[in-house]
Image (cartoon, rainbow, N blue to C red; front, side, top):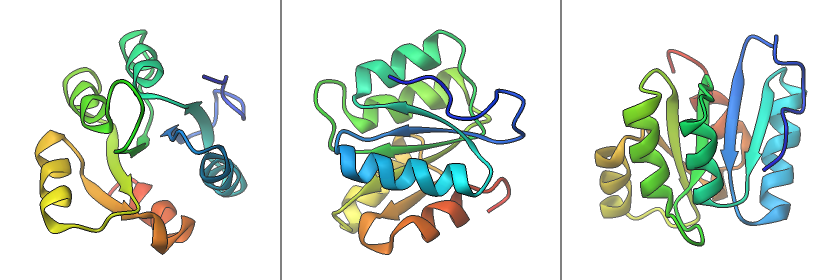
Amino acid sequence: MTAPATPPSAPRTILIVEDDDEVLQRFDRAFRTAGWATVDARNGADAIALVKSGLRPTAALVDIGLPGASGFDVLRELKTSAPATRALACSSLEDPILIATCRRAGAADFVAKSKGVAEALRLAEPGA
């Protein structure tokens, strides 16, 4: 877990939940460059703890394949505790059944890692 990378007064905050450091850094850098405040978690348990402690981000980008608590667990917690957060599921797999399961768990949309950060930035915007 890391602290927000930009001041908390930033208008948009995204929780990025990703266990691959390279992927996490790529998404974090892109969102900060686009003016977002970022909060990073490297596993599902840390992400859930952040939400339970009161974090209410504008959006969340949640890898599904996480160690320990899964991305599905994080999506369900966001849906329960932070329903206004635009939750995005993220995976390298683009399976229709996986995508449907993500939506049932609370994802507003799905970001394929192969589509890159531009797709995540577009879908994270409120009203996307």
